[in-house]
Amino acid sequence: MKIAIFGGGVAGLSAAINLLDRGYDVDLYEKRGVLGGKVSAWRDKDGDTIESGLHIVFGGYEELQKLLDKIGAKDNYLWKDHALTYAESEGQQSAFKKADLPSPWAELIGGLQADFITLGDKLSLIKGLFPALSGNEEYFRSQDDMTYSEWHHIRGCSENSLQRLWRPIALAMNFIEPNVISARPMVTIFKYFGTDYAATRFAFFKANPGDSMIDPMIKYIEEKGGRVIPSSRLSKFALNEDDTVRAAIMADGSEIEADAYVSALPVHSFKKIIPRAWNKHRYFQNLYQFVGSPVANCQLWFDKKITDTDNLMFSHGTTFATFADVSLTCPDDFQAGIGSATGGSVMSLVLAPAHHIMDMPNDIIIENIMKDLHDRFPRSRDAKLLKYTMVKIPESVYKAVPGVDKYRPDQRTPIDNFFLAGDYTYQKYLASMEGAALSGKQVAERIHKRFNGAD
Ligand SMILES: Cc1cc2nc3c(=O)[nH]c(=O)nc-3n(C[C@H](O)[C@H](O)[C@H](O)COP(=O)(O)OP(=O)(O)OC[C@H]3O[C@@H](n4cnc5c(N)ncnc54)[C@H](O)[C@@H]3O)c2cc1C
Image (tube, rainbow, N blue to C red; front, top):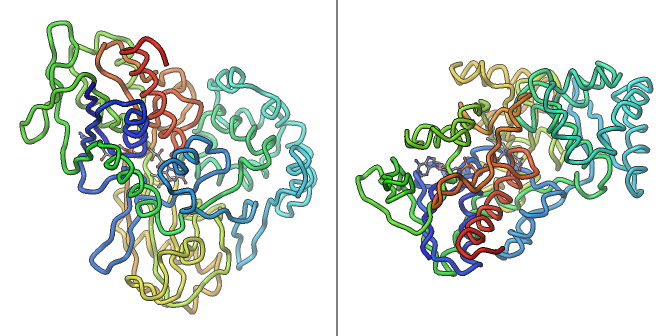
């Protein structure tokens, strides 16, 4: 059976890999010249790697790690120290380090040792977070009717812990503030933070997500006989009388016929091409509930090292919410002699919240970033900025606001030969590489069940 997949992000690539493994014939069409979607990376004219966004693999990403193993990329990422590192004013740093004990003692003892929140904050958290730590999926989904700030205050947790500890985490996870994000994804990650010692470890790709993950995925697909076709944009679907797909019509007018079709487009792109006839189904109407979160990723090349921290960092009250010096975290790229790098720091910064910076001129954004860097990393005051790049994504992952979780669609649609994959489709994770990988696995299961009657 021939399956046509549209969209070459992690979801589409994972769907292709899982379908090939089940013996299907797979063609994957991607609009851009580069594969990977939000995880894509490419080289600019100077030979520097530009990333759509700084990407971290979490210890809890079981599906993604299995996928990386399968495609021969298990050595392409590096685990870092088990800590949440917060950059503070005047070069100070605070850390929430897990103690070397089994969960929940690791978190409890580690949390009690954190020096950037008070004892009162800590006690309020221990008491307040208990329902999240003992909760199950049903409980997490039931918390989708309020924002995280509301949940935090109802549970009696302190304002200081919200601002200092959890605000940067909300911004890192979904690029929105704690008084905008639903409690649902936050309490879900508390469960991971609080009960599974390994789940909160961070790993960085050794080079960049393109070389370390996306290229090996493409290689695996092609070696298994699948085809990956870049620069091919899906324009619309032509339907049969019963509303099933007759053919996919591409932007160049060509028609693609297959036994089943998978959209692995981001939800905002898919909404634009939903055939009118399908809108009679509540399933498709629900997709209009999703709105993308704006975010930007800024990379800055310096002539000197401005930090020694070889890990992900968070910060509070700055233009950037989460960031890293990729010249330290990624030893196979961003090193002296590669592109513009001279051995100095290469900062990769995720700018969030970012609604106000989408239209702001880049030089103003950079001025603000430099002020913040001078404050957080005093060594940057004597370093020369050699170059910067900015990638703005007006609609990135869907905003996980209260009430939206229930609209996340299953991968099986009401249309018999049409399926959905993508980080927004229903799986146990929020929009993430793990969520996208899981959605690809689940779409392959749904297709197999539909055409073979069993998983
Ligand atoms: C700045 C940033 C940082 C992030 N950091 C992390 C992180 O640290 N860890 C983590 O787990 N996740 C992170 N994420 C989230 C993660 O990148 C996404 O959740 C995941 O990559 C989404 O994968 P996807 O395949 O569902 O969608 P996408 O990556 O959006 O892929 C969809 C693909 O469809 C293509 N497409 C669109 N329209 C068409 C069309 N008409 N025809 C053909 N193709 C089309 C697009 O070009 C794209 O390649 C981050 C995201 C951003 C933006």
